Amino acid sequence: MFPIKDTVRSRSFPLVNWSLIALNLLVFLHEVSMSRGALQHFIYTYGLVPARLWAHPLQAWPTIFTSMFLHGGWFHVLSNMWVLFIFGDNVEDRMGPGRYLMFYLLSGVAAALMQAWVLPTSMVPTVGASGAIAGVLGAYMVFYPRGQVLTLVPLFIFITFMELPAWLFIGIWFVTQLYSGWMALLPYGAHTMGGVAWWAHIGGFVFGFLFARYFAHRPDRRYLDELYRW
Image 1: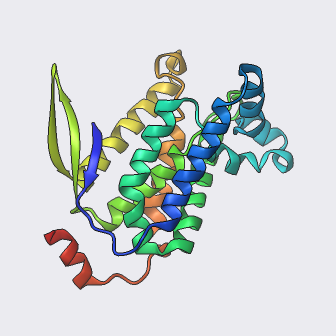
Image 2: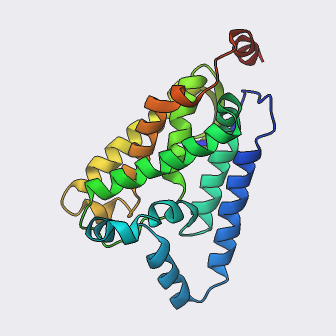
């Protein structure tokens, strides 16, 4: 499934969300300008390496944050930014720019620590904004469960578009992360599951789902009713 758009309107311009998207894209453009060797050194230096984090936490803790703005390829960065574009503006609208930025970064921290805790001896750098974005999805599920998500759905050899309730779309996504994360822990699972940081997604989502309410402004029930009638 791939989200095309949602039907929840935002009342304010999502300055922080757009800034996060721009920053991620600028960093990625810097990555693609490097030589292969320089890029490998850059990723290993600023990506989150779980074994290094636990062995030298005082030196390695900044990579918890820098790794959120690195990506491994065009599809990686564009798919992440598209999801952030669709869902992040509404979450920022409920939280306000300052709280949203703090929430986004803390979701990324939770994601990084979960990945490092599950795979503490891994020397493979973890990069990407998907853990922080998973927190945004968790918050969206809390704030707008009745919102509709226009979704591209492959059905065997056909492709169709469906409007799914946000709780269903995000719920299915989370179940797939749990399944993939579990499979990755089985013998030879890391090879068959494509090297994706599934547990970072899980950690970020759980943080977002559990703590989103603490970052939100007091809800305006009349406004929420108007959103869902649109």
